[in-house]
Length: 118
Ligand SMILES: [Zn+2]
Ligand SMILES: [Zn+2]
Image (tube, rainbow, N blue to C red):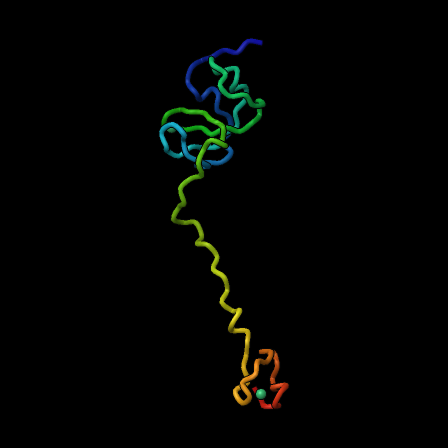
Protein backbone atom coordinates (compact mmCIF):
# COMPACT_ATOMS: atom_id res chain seq x y z
CA UNK A 1 0.00 0.00 0.00
CA UNK A 2 1.17 3.50 -0.72
CA UNK A 3 0.60 6.45 1.56
CA UNK A 4 1.46 9.84 0.28
CA UNK A 5 2.63 12.17 3.01
CA UNK A 6 1.64 15.62 1.85
CA UNK A 7 2.86 17.40 4.92
CA UNK A 8 0.87 19.11 7.60
CA UNK A 9 -0.96 17.30 10.29
CA UNK A 10 -4.32 18.30 8.86
CA UNK A 11 -4.01 15.46 6.43
CA UNK A 12 -4.12 13.02 9.32
CA UNK A 13 -6.86 14.52 11.42
CA UNK A 14 -10.35 13.46 10.59
CA UNK A 15 -13.60 14.40 12.21
CA UNK A 16 -13.50 16.23 15.52
CA UNK A 17 -15.36 14.02 17.95
CA UNK A 18 -15.21 16.23 21.03
CA UNK A 19 -13.77 19.70 21.12
CA UNK A 20 -11.65 20.49 24.11
CA UNK A 21 -11.85 16.98 25.47
CA UNK A 22 -8.44 17.15 27.07
CA UNK A 23 -5.16 18.91 27.28
CA UNK A 24 -2.08 18.62 25.15
CA UNK A 25 0.63 16.52 26.73
CA UNK A 26 3.25 18.62 24.95
CA UNK A 27 2.23 22.24 25.44
CA UNK A 28 -0.70 21.98 27.87
CA UNK A 29 -3.19 23.84 25.73
CA UNK A 30 -6.67 22.62 24.88
CA UNK A 31 -6.75 19.51 22.71
CA UNK A 32 -9.60 18.05 20.70
CA UNK A 33 -10.64 14.45 20.48
CA UNK A 34 -10.46 13.58 16.80
CA UNK A 35 -10.95 10.50 14.73
CA UNK A 36 -7.86 9.61 12.79
CA UNK A 37 -7.41 7.07 10.11
CA UNK A 38 -4.19 5.50 9.02
CA UNK A 39 -2.26 7.76 11.32
CA UNK A 40 0.20 5.00 12.02
CA UNK A 41 1.28 4.88 8.43
CA UNK A 42 1.75 8.63 8.38
CA UNK A 43 4.15 8.51 11.27
CA UNK A 44 7.70 7.91 10.26
CA UNK A 45 8.42 6.46 13.65
CA UNK A 46 5.53 4.30 14.79
CA UNK A 47 5.59 5.14 18.46
CA UNK A 48 2.03 4.19 19.17
CA UNK A 49 0.22 1.05 18.14
CA UNK A 50 -3.53 1.21 17.89
CA UNK A 51 -6.23 0.24 15.41
CA UNK A 52 -6.83 2.64 12.59
CA UNK A 53 -10.17 3.85 13.83
CA UNK A 54 -9.18 4.78 17.35
CA UNK A 55 -9.87 8.38 18.30
CA UNK A 56 -6.88 10.52 19.15
CA UNK A 57 -6.24 13.76 20.91
CA UNK A 58 -5.09 16.53 18.63
CA UNK A 59 -3.57 19.81 19.73
CA UNK A 60 -4.19 22.74 17.41
CA UNK A 61 -1.45 24.71 19.06
CA UNK A 62 1.53 22.49 18.47
CA UNK A 63 -0.01 19.92 16.09
CA UNK A 64 0.56 17.05 18.46
CA UNK A 65 -1.28 13.77 18.21
CA UNK A 66 -1.44 11.45 21.16
CA UNK A 67 -3.73 8.80 22.64
CA UNK A 68 -6.50 10.15 24.88
CA UNK A 69 -5.39 8.06 27.84
CA UNK A 70 -2.28 10.20 28.16
CA UNK A 71 -4.25 13.42 28.30
CA UNK A 72 -5.27 14.86 31.65
CA UNK A 73 -8.90 15.89 31.90
CA UNK A 74 -9.70 19.43 30.82
CA UNK A 75 -9.65 22.09 33.51
CA UNK A 76 -13.05 22.66 35.11
CA UNK A 77 -14.93 25.32 33.26
CA UNK A 78 -16.92 28.01 34.95
CA UNK A 79 -20.19 26.96 33.37
CA UNK A 80 -20.06 23.44 34.76
CA UNK A 81 -22.78 22.80 37.30
CA UNK A 82 -21.64 22.79 40.93
CA UNK A 83 -21.51 19.42 42.68
CA UNK A 84 -24.89 18.37 43.93
CA UNK A 85 -25.37 19.09 47.56
CA UNK A 86 -26.90 16.48 49.74
CA UNK A 87 -30.43 17.34 50.71
CA UNK A 88 -30.61 18.28 54.37
CA UNK A 89 -34.07 16.82 54.62
CA UNK A 90 -32.80 13.90 56.67
CA UNK A 91 -33.52 15.84 59.84
CA UNK A 92 -36.38 18.02 58.72
CA UNK A 93 -38.45 14.94 57.92
CA UNK A 94 -38.70 14.21 61.61
CA UNK A 95 -41.61 15.95 63.20
CA UNK A 96 -42.02 16.15 66.91
CA UNK A 97 -45.29 16.45 68.64
CA UNK A 98 -45.39 19.79 70.37
CA UNK A 99 -47.34 18.30 73.26
CA UNK A 100 -45.57 15.02 74.03
CA UNK A 101 -42.30 15.70 72.15
CA UNK A 102 -42.32 12.31 70.50
CA UNK A 103 -41.22 11.79 66.94
CA UNK A 104 -44.18 11.36 64.63
CA UNK A 105 -44.42 10.90 60.91
CA UNK A 106 -44.79 14.30 59.21
CA UNK A 107 -47.63 12.89 57.13
CA UNK A 108 -49.68 12.33 60.26
CA UNK A 109 -52.21 14.97 61.14
CA UNK A 110 -52.65 13.76 64.70
CA UNK A 111 -50.07 12.51 67.13
CA UNK A 112 -50.43 8.71 67.47
CA UNK A 113 -49.17 8.89 71.06
CA UNK A 114 -51.26 11.59 72.62
CA UNK A 115 -53.83 12.28 69.94
CA UNK A 116 -53.05 15.97 69.71
CA UNK A 117 -53.50 17.79 66.47
CA UNK A 118 -50.17 18.38 64.77
ZN1 LIG B 1 0.13 21.21 22.14
ZN1 LIG C 1 -48.09 13.86 71.02
